[in-house]
Length: 404
Length: 86
Image (cartoon, rainbow over all chains, first blue to last red; front, side, top):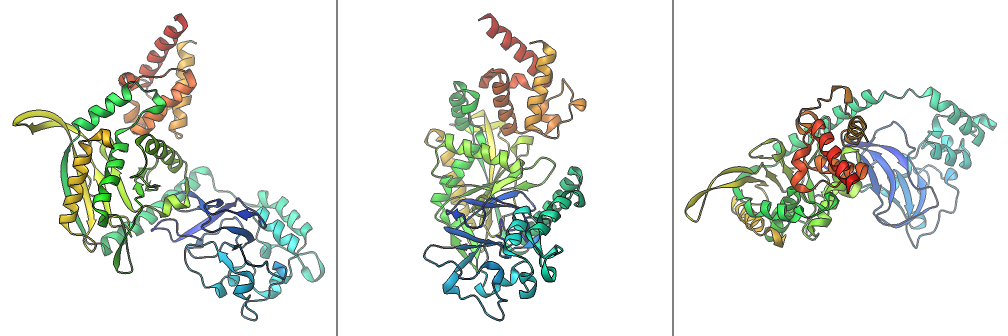
């Protein structure tokens, strides 16, 4: 069970999208896992062949680090014995060189620990299920260990699995959509509570703010959008995302993570964009390489991300990759936002509403749309001076919107 | 297409953006943004969905004219009529 976000502690396998024996490419979606914040498409981080599914889809929430499947990588031999005949690991560990399975989990799991997590891990129990029955049970989302066998010595046969599958839909009491949504909402609040409390407990925040004259940027945007079809327009949040990403190139110390008691800068700039969900809660998935993508592409990516976040359907890389968080609360007239850093990131950038206000330009007081940009920084990693340089760079970039 | 048909299709389109939309409690003359908590991304997606539904591309300068259900219906009725006459 991969950790799909800093605040995730457990998840539930909803669906397998690959079957045992199928080839898997790096980055390919192999399963859907429900977290407290989304149904996440889990992408494989290795290439190989799906050797075995260890966890059937179901209602059980599994802790982060639980092996979900075994993937055989290139250059390693298939196991010589059928899966069902694998003896308990304590008695005869599967030699790593023979199988070299890679557990699909973000946490490092010692190879010797993996077989112990198999359903019905004890050797005797595993032997009671025929390989075909086990395979079919996993396909149908049933736990083979929970079935009653009609074969010799209670052995669970393919027929037993098919019978159980026919009974299962009627027997399973599905929660109503309203109850499921309420439960999910509660879990999301718990996840946010855990993450934010950890942040406030561990991260010594410093906060900076600056006023940005958005006159040029908004005028440029209005002109650019004027002649375009509705499908090709930009919203101003995209300018803020791009400018933030480019400013982070200039002050890279703010982009990355605090891990093992030190700051680890990230070369890639993956903007975690805070998206409020209908009904409450939020998620901040990554817009990958936000500094490198043209505005049109960034807009398309942002649109897609918002749509999928609100449909609870995100990819694992989007949940785990953000190197910084950007939040804009300007939609409802908020002047400024001093956000809480998402651990283990190093900074959060916040934007309020551009408000028409008096501003002095060339000695004259003129009305300008002014926006408050803020930075919440981790004082263990950076000091206010670097933060100030970042905000100055951000301001400067927003004065040249055509260059974004 | 009469106004009632346009209204029904506008509300159906809005339901694609706001899944929990209760059409019965929707106030026709109240700002969509205020009563449905939609943001600028939602609103742009609404305009895109209207474009797909009615074939009417609302120019950026006119976006503010679609703030309520009544305003949407009136705007689209006029746009469809103009298109039919063209």
